[in-house]
Length: 414
Image 1 (cartoon, rainbow, N blue to C red):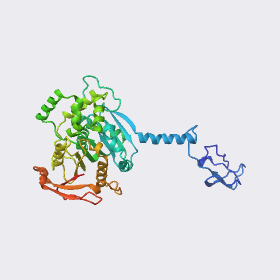
Image 2 (image 1 turned 120 degrees about the vertical axis):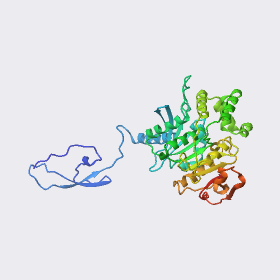
Image 3 (image 1 turned 60 degrees about the vertical axis):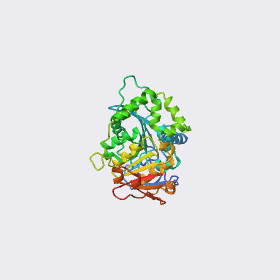
Image 4 (image 1 turned 90 degrees about the horizontal axis):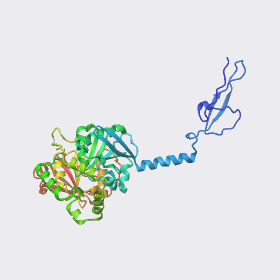
């Protein structure tokens, strides 16, 4: 029986074995192959040792030095974030992705407030040193509301900006584009409303929410009239600053206030910001109801600064949510934007929140565990007049947040 010798093949593969009788091994692996006699008469096949040297595959014409440079560039790109835009039924939306998806872990998806974009709203928080432990464990998606991204062109006159409900309906398009199935949402102000609306309509895709300065209510007639009167005497930028920061902060005119006043006042897309502002002021009521059909079904952490513009609204939102699923964080000395002024305390609270969801069980807590005071506010107090005299205070020196008894909402002041 005749057989032909195997043809040439790529080196370093099983098909590319070269017969070298008597040669010493050079490669990392050694296998045996059966030689075929060139004689027409069938005979015993000779076993010979063949050397295979494994090499890291390179692209055609690529040197090892170029491969290392490409790998480094890819890592830098992941650190800087990858920006994408996707078309939705309500227009294009831009978002930036940091990191790579982790198996069996949701993405952290952020949504910013009016007058800000994802960088000016969240950069101080996510670049904080202690936050690095979190971002190493989760992929992040930072969403910019339409027209709020850096370098965004101004919308033409008469452009119909999406409502907050429609902004929420854009999120499924983002997740479908990225092939993500679940998120932990982190939103501020208008962004907190957008993520709450999304969680109400897509509860199966939201594992948890961190809502800073959320106002779940539509503006009443009195609020609407006051807003119109304010608009007659104040510029758009001043009204937005009053939405973001407390009057004490604005009067103090700190370096932070000066920075954000300059950002908003001189924003090249200020007309776009005004459209987002108008959509926020025309929001619908979320109609949340404790124990009712309309409620957030995932774990929620509500955050507000002491004496912040939205303190009363967040307290009211707290009274409408399931107390066994909700933690309420009131942060002292943080003003209207705790993610900017107290990133350390907020980071540690976020770690506790993630631990409560079953993630980062080995994370070490250091900051709040030494300085935190926790108070368990009775459900009756919240549903009634929310009297502070009916609040039970407990100081905690342990490394974990105290667990509130059933029917109570945990309030943590730090």
